[in-house]
Image (tube, rainbow, N blue to C red; front, side, top):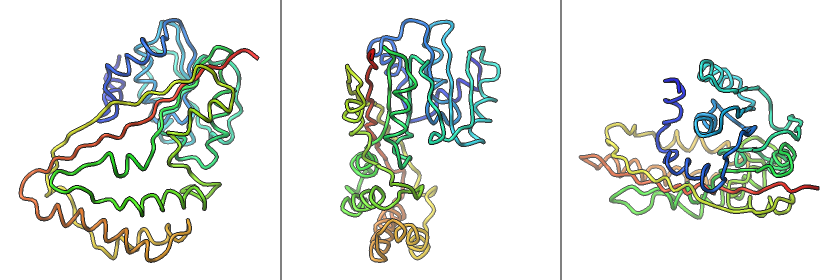
Length: 283
């Protein structure tokens, strides 16, 4: 494993590597040579996690619309010795070929307005007996319940957060399309069932982190600037000026709290990414 791949693989706060190895070897039982396609591969993080664990001769194809990420991935894996291929492609334009053993995505579907059609493409990309694996967030957990700053119970307005997420789904999302579904992580197993997958199961990424944050490293912003930056987007998705005011007020609660601290503050994150997987059966 090259140093570039190792550095990517050890990306902080994402996975306990022993748990990912457990998934590959004990849960998904990937023992034979396989062909993998990664939907929304970015700079190849899944390749860095998976390829060291797969049998010799296995191959990996990554697709992503971000040209810079694809170029970075090609540079990282240039001397890896693995059969990896990275291609620039918008997932909405991708035409699936039924030739892979595994189709996987990591933190992608919750950013795509028409995520259901992309999941269907993942299903159509694997052969009979192939597996579809989705690792996605339920944003209401990540944004609020899974983030604790020691000394203050909550900074997040749960009501406003849910209103925001609901408005994205109903009114356009951050890509201006049919609406991004930030709750999709918890929905994917049922969506897989609707697409005909069998042996569907669900796990959770058990990675939790505790870090010590120096309050001097937190820049105190201007409340009016926060409001200005969010107001246009809120109006775009159907929220109000009053919602933008509430968001700015809530943001300042955190910064006011940090400005009062004289020592490092403990931050604990339990994002609980949902890991859903199912098998494509013979027609």
